[in-house]
Image 1 (cartoon, rainbow, N blue to C red):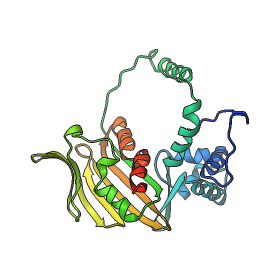
Image 2: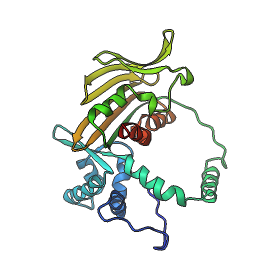
Image 3: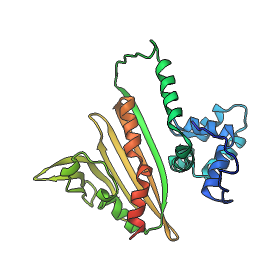
Image 4: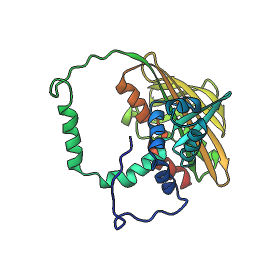
Length: 276
């Protein structure tokens, strides 16, 4: 999952001790911790499950490694009863990727990898697939921090969506994305003249602390989304949980990850709420 490049000190800027970037480098430096992230890339796992997956280490040692990953922001912990579930948090990895991998990767390497994938396919690079719907579960857990009040961030999530989220069903026809501020209220794209696209309905509305909806992405698929906002000094911690369950192909499940993860739209959202 993680790729590392050998870079001389002449081209690598010094990292500030205690910085998020330093924490990520430290967390990724150990093969065991990278293996734990690989395990979590398939979905949330309890601490016990992860300990069972690395039988050469004690449960205490696995918990120590998870603590390093949690401190670096790479793992988010959620408790359900007596169980502790660990989720992969893609935000620091994406920042690390954009800072180090993207500038250093060249086009020739990408072409060689594409060629390798092509020739290694069965049948000399020619393949035929038959799609069969499977019941899949996609879970996304993301935690972000903004230098803004909970009220301002809540307003951005429920009233100003068009100003930071770039994808809609109606495209140029969309006049507004509406969240009716009540339990049972509709969450939809307004195209005018009664036309539009329904995302779902509000299941929790507790301004400015919690906001949740239930809807569908495709026929037969349920999508639950919940936002929790917690003040922390001059910042607000935003925790997003998203669960999609239903008949989905691999491509459709990947689409949920692409468009359902708010961390992919962190920068425009940050510009909106922190500029106010």
